[in-house]
Image (cartoon, rainbow, N blue to C red; front, side, top):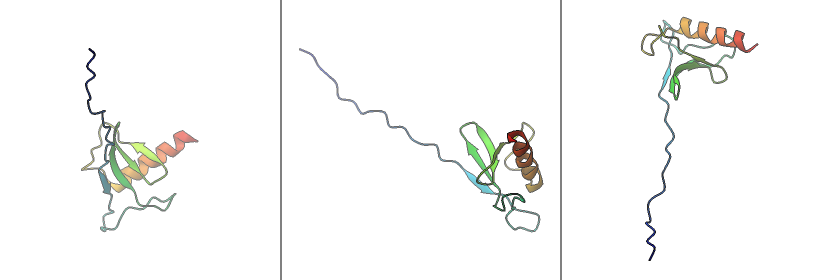
Amino acid sequence: MVVISACNPKKFQRRQTKTIILKDNDGKPAIDSVSGKPIEVKTGKFGPYVTDGTTNASLQLGDSIEQITSERAKELLADRRAQQN
């Protein structure tokens, strides 16, 4: 007699990214000068990154999600665009 156990198949869950919209010094959302879209900080599978919706740039070792400024985020996005071209 063969017994086949019925077990539940593995359910894969997608990781939900935590999104923070960066603000300028005046409290308004930081806007990327190239795309014109707001800059967001997200946590993904490979760590935190900044994005404007089209370009993604990873945060460097010295950067933290809580202390990144809009100027630093714009710099990271500009560096990433330069690498892509």
